[in-house]
Image (tube, rainbow, N blue to C red; front, side, top):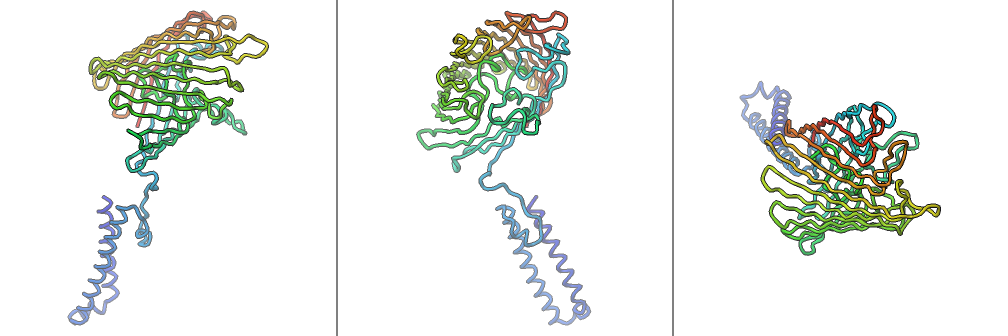
Length: 449
């Protein structure tokens, strides 16, 4: 199309030039029978045609190479091209909106939230969860360096935003907690063996079966384990090495959990081993350990995380996720660091989630999740019960059923029912006050690109 447009412009210029030439030589027209004058005119026309042909070739070359000098000199629009360092840049993202109904019909006070939830905590209303833009320059054989940046806008950013990147309020008091630079890192590949891939900057965690981006999950709501057992993001460095058809191994050093500016002198170690021992089976072993309390370099927080996926048949996929976490030097029921005035104790938590997803058709699927999460010392969920009491051992259970439809190529719709149950009365109903269960119905619409 661009080549045809360039040829049309040059031919139009040729026609205009010929017209000007003819009108500027009216005396030649009246004396056309004069052969010397006719020969001279033909010669000038041939020279002009050669020059225009040369101009056309140069314009075509400029369109192919991205140079703009010849177009600018000719008074034509300059062609736009990405800088050489951005060749191959890819852009993606999604927009996510939901409506959530809590059957407790809460409208004020304690009940104006879906307690124990992660991103779906606003009941009885519409929520603009996310608008994300991703810019990525992948590594290629000719360019062993790349980068990625994820710009995130929306209500979900208030939950996973990293401490130290932006303040909740700026100097003018404007609320900024719904904007986050979710990821920003540089990648590099060292030609050692099969190639070692490095990642330096801010990136999402290696742990867990679920992720921040809703379109990549099977369910609309997130599990307790995703929200309370593991971190969301890290700032630091990772190195990954492929193990051929068996999988890959990754290790790195980070500042800590959901933090950009480290709050102590210690660093955390993070790692992953992913194995594919059989066709349709993937096993992922993940872990992180390091001091996470402000000004404390000794009391470590450690989590071991396992994710297994099995596809026994084309339309059915099964998944399991188990976590075990431990942190020393905490006050039970608060998650706060110990001081000289209180006894320091270790806190533990663990959880198990089982998933199943079945594709009924090419555009319709059903997904279910059953989960148990034991916040043994109430240092992760930090929920209160009747009268503002702080239980020190809470077991949570939930089951979720999600129906997903692919409306168009880039549009997903979901309808989800979820039931939560706990060993303590930490949920809230208008009619009954605190209770031990919670039920919600949610509808979600996603546009991804």
